[in-house]
Image 1 (tube, rainbow, N blue to C red):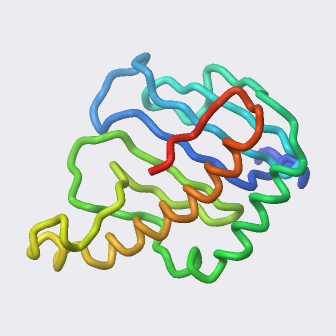
Image 2 (image 1 turned 45 degrees about the vertical axis):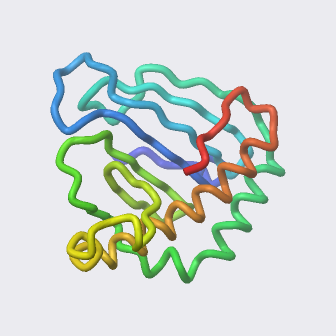
Image 3 (image 1 turned 90 degrees about the vertical axis):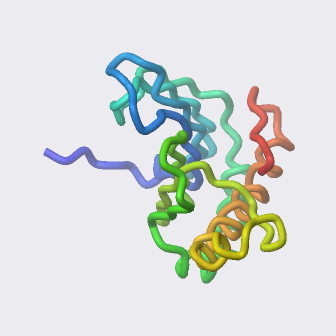
Length: 160
């Protein structure tokens, strides 16, 4: 039976990172930070290979934060809708990253901002569309991270 999600417990924003491509059961599998519609800011820890958290901690309840993040996502809805659900920049073994912007889920690996002038022309040509999409995801993530970092949640998200 599928678990029902209450509307106030839907995710407005979530960033999960960690877990390299290869590992063993029981190894650290990453961390996630999520902001729910009701304002709960939740941090989870995972074992490698498991989607279910081994530890879940509510850090704060800030409905105003959830509202401001939702506005950022709405403002970027057109941009988000044009980004594929899976991004690939040629990385073979790095921590996975999972971004959730309301209903939009994006999986990537080793996301980083790339300037055309900082990479070989061959790489840029091969990954041009992905580079543009990763940069767009990071722009939205950074705007949300700055918003989260304004509040006393017990965490500080890295600006990328």
